[in-house]
Length: 212
Image (cartoon, rainbow, N blue to C red; front, side, top):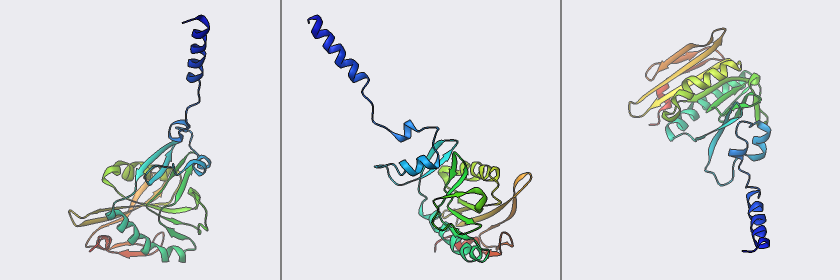
């Protein structure tokens, strides 16, 4: 190969080495996600439907709930809707609740202090209660991590729901924020009444969260 030919090959190789790679938001935006970037790049085309949450700029993708949790969340939502409205707010299923500039969650159900009226991003200070139906694949996150983040953001109430068709059991736990973090305000198992007067009157048997 002549010197000229060799130089041509080297120039072509250098050009290929510096050719820009295709932008991948999951890789290129790792650690810097914000609601503004989420509005621009999410959902990611070609990916299956997932929940997009964010912790300190790092995107967390999780599959949607199974039918047991979906049914339980819908039943809870129905029971929250009227008292939430009577309080001047609103009850919702999945929303983007922003805990900090680079943190957000998508709870299974949410009660706001005032109606969302079409907003996509809900600040923590507008959020009265968030609720999670515990999944086997995210048990630690639903029972420990998310409550800790919500407490840090100052959300007054956190409701945890666990259902098991194998055991025909359901449990509802309402946590209330105080100076020491979340403390159990009330809890109940299927076959007994879950009752509370705060943040509004609510009474039902957790067994109602299991589909017949």
